[in-house]
Image (tube, rainbow, N blue to C red; front, side):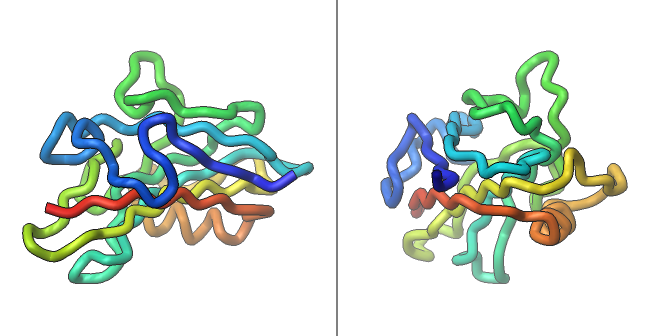
Length: 153
């Protein structure tokens, strides 16, 4: 079975709803996945905008997601009792910050990338940023799933 990532908020290639963008309510969209490969010890998730003018911009990195978990509910990053680990995104926050491309820059493609890892956790310093987390996750990735949403201002 193939690792698959979906969101009840938007379909592959669709526009990301206003409530999930930084100019809107800035709520992390709900995500669900199926098909975790055998040997999955944990998951890591990153949200990237490769269309950013200065290069890939990371809006979220969450890691050490337990292997039996199959979803992140809306606003999982700010939910009380949340025990997941969040790296600093490129805005400098340890949470989701939604799309906010420059006005008039055209459509940006936001990649929600989920990796099944062969280790139970990534042991990185608390100050590690999203790029460092994803780089380390790639060393342990068994399989990846990608969901793309589009947004422009």
